[in-house]
Image (cartoon, rainbow, N blue to C red; front, side, top):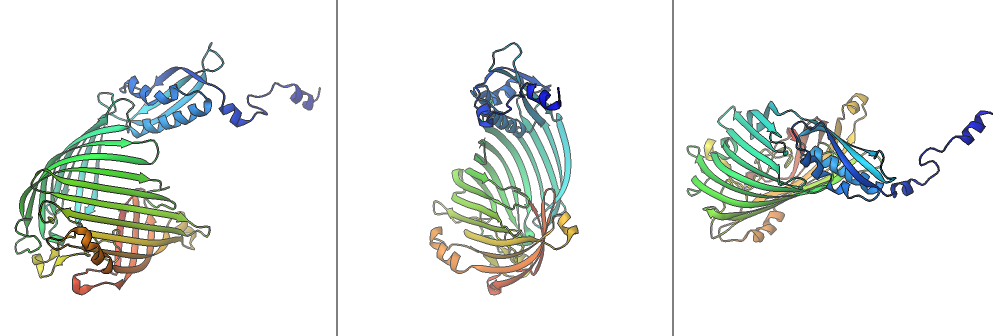
Length: 452
């Protein structure tokens, strides 16, 4: 008997000659679930994430539900890895299967340190995380930071799933911070408060968060400063509720080439306390990749702040615009209402309505070495404005002046991707700026952006 005869008499392999779609439609009945590697994690927590998979009726439904369950287990941030395997149930019926869930837990606690720049001040941060100590996916996080000037902060945050298998997560936070804003706005602010939040992360790309915050705020002006009204300095108590919606379908938050991003924030203050306002902001991104290797991006932000109850907006609630990422070509807080003067007498006052819009085209450079490191060149155009509304005027009435007084900047530069974000080195040229109105522009800029 030759080789061809042997092949013709061999039993067919499973699925050989069958339609794959037909195989995925084969009925399935999950009989048992085994969990391996859960030394601290409660078995019920893992099983709850598999609830939809246990109700699957076909192999296609089971594969989809197990993929989503694995993603949810990883998002708990208590496992290094989570894998779901399906096997035939020994001694069971033809459609009977069992699921083996193999998890590797993260350590009980971690300690990390880091440095960063914020508001022109260098900061050193220490963070400690205690996770999954009760086995229900909870986390206790604390971090402290100290700036090289006077800024400092301390925060303790506790979070856990609302219930086993729930798409919602509860968190509560105690915090205190001191922000030194004298370089750009000639004041310091101390905050002490508490916050609670409920976050719902749906399977897919969208999430909602409802957030309450009660915070005691103290504003201290620099000697001779004129950026704050007398009633803005001193103490105030803000009690507010905020809703955040995020939709993210970008392929890479650091240096996206395609996809879209949308984030909206709405905050209502005045649930007690002496600060009353309605504040809304929308940030959006759209990225597309062309057939010639050029990546196109359109990024925009828009915000409105309306003081309520006859109040005027406060400097620590207003919008500040400018910086090499927020509005290229402008210095930090360099676009918008400001007080002109010498030394501490000058500074940015912030606005009640703002917008920024940026369009860019990024492309690889003709250097193999730079291409290996992912370095790209880009050209861009940025538009934006930031205005304050006169007393007694509703913020929507300021939109015509917001749009008609736009600023425009064009430029080019290099983009270097990093593991946590990107670095930009840009040269800019103002096309429409108003130095007499206080615009603070910059020709050369270096920016470090973290993926968001």
